[in-house]
Image (spheres, one colour):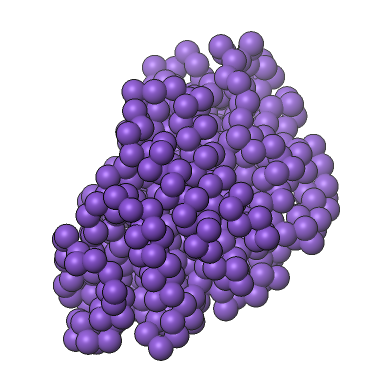
Amino acid sequence: MHFSILPLLALASTTLSIPVAENPSSVPAGLVDCLNSKSVPVRLTSSSDFQNLAKPFNLRLAYIPAAIVLPTTTKHISDAVLCSGQNGVKVQAKSGGHSYASYSSGGQNGSTVIDLENFQDISLDANGIAKVGAGVRLGNLALGIYNTGNAKRALPHGTCPGVGLGGHATHGGFGDASRHWGLTLDAITAMDVTLANGTTALRGAAESFGIVSTFYLVTKPAPASVVHYFFSISNIYSSVTAATEIFLHLQDFARNASVVDRNISFRVYLDAQQFWFEGTYFGSLETFNNKIRPELLRGLPEPSSTDVRSVDWITSLTINAGADLAQPLTGYDAHDDFYAKSITSPESAPLTATALTSYFNYIVKNGVNAPFNWFSIIGLYGGPDSQINVTPSTSSAYSDRSILWNFQNYARRAGSTSSAIISFVAGLNNAIISAQPQTAFGAYANYVDPELTAAQAHSLYYDAPTYAKLSEIKKKVDPGKVFWNPQAVGN
């Protein structure tokens, strides 16, 4: 059963780092007895497949759950929540398990993890509403709504095909089509949610409030073709001044309403050696080449590599993913070992030359010869006609509705230490923020930062009025804080 969405709770909850204990001291016998008495499918540390099920996407933050529940029905979810609450065990859902802070593993040792991998159904009704299980990964979602009944439908969502829909959609869901159609969050028309008291209802809840088992999403007709474009520039760090001027031009382009509207997506990628910009144009190749391309490249160095072509919708998604869209329904085994932070910069305060000079100086000094792999992805979020920013911030608990750029700064631990990559990534953020102190920067909840305190996270991910409302709702629907992670609402 599903109900009309309560917009206020369409987004909720985020993170903080805590040390990993050796093991949960013990699993409460009452929890195990309760789950078994209700025939809830569960894996304990003694189970042969527990280790594989517990393995997080981010290997740097490996927590050991008290129990991993593998429900096949919403009754199993409801019973698992009740059993956990009655025995003082915190609960978190796992959709795809890609939480950067391993909150889908509980964010601590000893939680009940409710793994939704069995909720894989995808169907479409005559009105283009997709009913999608919360365990569906984004690549399978894209293929499912496109291929089901040859419907050729589409949704805005992120590019990584292995990410689960649950956390992605309830924390925004920014991706290549978002400027064109909005966020994944904006496509949600209803959800089936289990609350802390075990009842099943829709109240627009995320990790701080309940477990979504099914999403109902308004799909769009997939375009017959789009333009994929890619340009790289060599030797970007040979001159900080030149690098700054290049980005300032790209920013001017991104804000130029005579060429930019909702039909263009745009992102910059850079690492220790490479710098490129790419995106998707929802229009013809002729229009892109005659109108968009000349202004995009005006005054820039000759690109060292270029790829501009018209492709079908699924090919476009595959290019952006850099991998096959189809993902395993069980036994997913992709992992990384990393730390990431984000910056969201306001549309009203474009990045200054001073901030960009500081950023590129930091990279030249600390990043070019870093002993670990790192990258930054800077996505155009706002700009003229962005369909993300036309939605009022009061429409949901998602506050980022007036953003220009969305930075993801990311470093892998291989060849180094946790402290080194944390320090480096924090430096990337600080290089921008400290050089533009007059600007109130934010952060993106799906790039959750485990180094933030709960108070810092609440301030960065929500505006104050929204968080105050969320706190009051938390007290009503989950007074015992059954649904918990280190930065959950109410902490």
